[in-house]
Length: 92
Image (cartoon, rainbow, N blue to C red; front, side, top):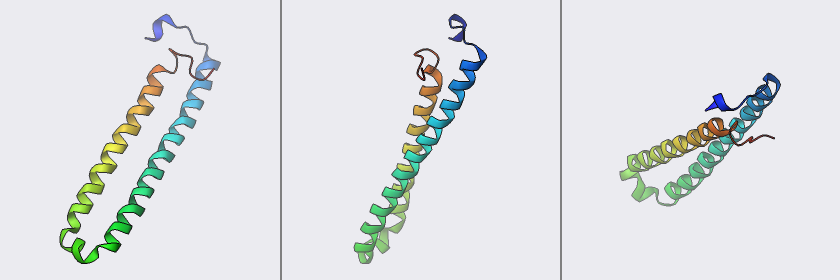
C-alpha cells in the first residue's frame, strides 16, 4: 500500500497528528451518542417505571448492544481514515 507512495517524514508527522485530531472527534461523537441515548432511555424508564421495573434488565441489554454496535462503527471509521489517509492525501 505505502510502497508506491513516497512520504517525507514531515508530512507523515503532520498526517499522524491530524489523525490524532480525528480520533478525538470520533471519540467525541461516540460520547455524544452515548449521552443522548442515556438521556432518552432515562426518560423512557422514568416515565414507565411501574412497567419497566419488571423488565429493567432488557433496557440494560438493549443499551449495551447499542453501545457495542456504535463503538465498533466508530472504530471502523477511525481505521478507515487511518488506512486511506496516505492514499487520498486526506489532510492536504
